Amino acid sequence: MVQKKINVEKPKMDLLDSVTDLERVQSVDAPFGVPRLMWCFWSEGDMGAVRSLSLSYLVKNVGVPVFLVTRKSFFRLEKPEFPIHPAFRWLSAVHQSDYVRTYLWHHYGGAWHDVKATEVSYFPLWDHFEDELVYFLGRPEVRGGAATLYDDSGRWMPDCWHDLVSVIAWIGRPNTPFSREMMERMHLFLDQNLDTLKANPARHPREKKAEGSNAILRAIKKAYFSVSKRSPGYPIPWTLFGNIFHPLNFKYKEHVRALLPSDRQKNAGIYHRN
Image 1 (cartoon, rainbow, N blue to C red):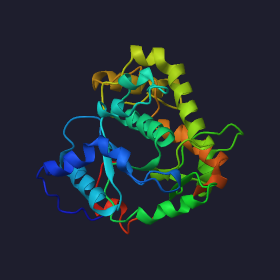
Image 2: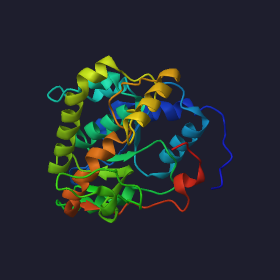
Image 3: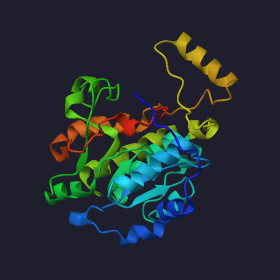
Image 4: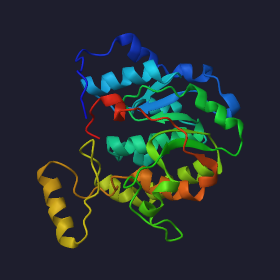
């Protein structure tokens, strides 16, 4: 992949001001009950040159208002009747992002995009929601991209990749059976792991559970995490969102459309670590 030359200057303040002004959310139009906006998340701290450039690409190209949510500003979007799960504070930045996208999808709706560049417009895609049976628009999943687990019916998700969509970018209708079950299962998983998470909170933005095919490998990973100042007892697997989403994606596949456009080059040719 050819990496674009990166302008290392900080993003202009008017850009940051516009994407972090969450008061504007209320003024966004919502054709067919789906807000025509895009959510992104950055936990905290310096975004860096590459991510800043990617954010500017999103704002310039997607054709809808972009809102950047942070760990702190997320609480301004909390619904009093649906409180943010108490586990949120102990999650890694990656898993906070997984929770934020679930919460915003169910309670607000709209598009989601990781802070990665694109050169395609999403504006016309909202027309697909004229069909009330359409709950979700995504990009076709690729072979090897599905979460590696079985669903409730014993289906191995990697074998079902052609029926699934990617988790990186999508548009979701709020308050559907799909989004509701996603939110409920996310909260159930966090309930089940809350005590362990409190005792072993994330120390690293990319914290993940020390997993392995046998006890020896798991012990080696935990030892590595300890010396690398990570949390060896952190209980949340890397693919938190995908592990819940892909089985439900298959369950509700009749309500999902793989219609999101893709760039000619991945991430518009801008290299990201992931």
